[in-house]
Image 1 (spheres, rainbow, N blue to C red):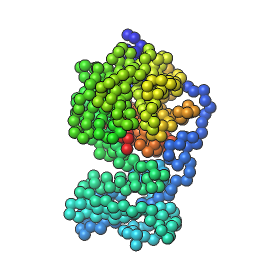
Image 2: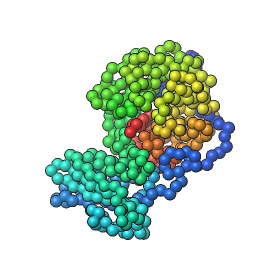
Image 3: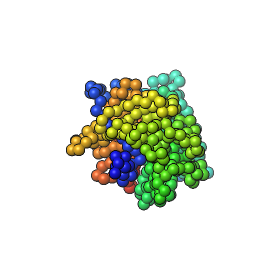
Image 4: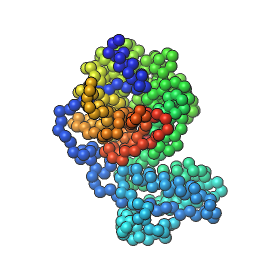
Length: 454
């Protein structure tokens, strides 16, 4: 068996569609992430202290809408807590009486101890005639003359999902206004692989782990979901009797659509304009990086070297660079190149790493890295972030098992990843500086997350 065949057998047996590499960079120890990884999580600056009042239920029948209100209040608080840019006031420190309108709010009740809030979100929720309506305000507690920062109104057909959706919308509006204009991610989605239905299918969930739903029903081994920039198409790899091929699912039609293959295609990646796909294919013998149109036609090879080349990912800011994993020098390494295959740069040297993902601003790569890879070596596989220009890196996960498949959120403030402990794979999320780590899934085995572009 050749070296590539051994590698191919390994990732197929573990249902992993990528190869990887690791590095032992000859660099000094670095300070915490916020000193140089500008991920948009305030970088050591004092976070805005924000309070959220429970919304006032204005329905005529107090029993109508109470469940929606509970869902709305909890979702709004959670969204703002997860944003990474606020110091959120505990509900126990909030004033006992929540204002229903600007005429009722007393700013000093929120600006003074124990709340000490610089900003406060409040409003009303009503359910009537099969509709849920919400009016929300954001006020600056220090500005007595013109405190209003934001005022929003929402109206949807009544349901618990609608209450959650409106809370997400209002949270994103607050995050965008107070977070430098960067859109929030409360309405974004994560796509992932799960075996909970009996086969490895593609699933989706809200950014916070809610509303987990099965997308595909192929009964095959499916891997590496990648949602298109416009959210209309889902590319992934699947194994049938003919081999591995890229498959395409229409989110608009809720069904599979035609996409040509060769029986040896893996790890699709969308260009930021949605017009092209990069992928790995062994159709000419050695696995190389190929690019085709979004239709699947016009495929052409951009790498040509002995050793497997897999896991391409485009620079989402420029659309002119691709990061990928190559085994051309032995153990797989992390590389970057221009979209036509020129200007190849090796980013790592040694060890074993997998699955690069490019930050939305194009400045960083996150990837999984076993820096101690080798027979009898200690350590394990963790998530790292590397600055492209300097090749400086930091380690984000420590002592929580094996970690792989990191994926950036569209705001650049969060990273989701696959965590394996006690033989079980689950999807976790964290802030891009490594803090706030927690699981999003728990049912079945879940892996290979991919965050939507918006």
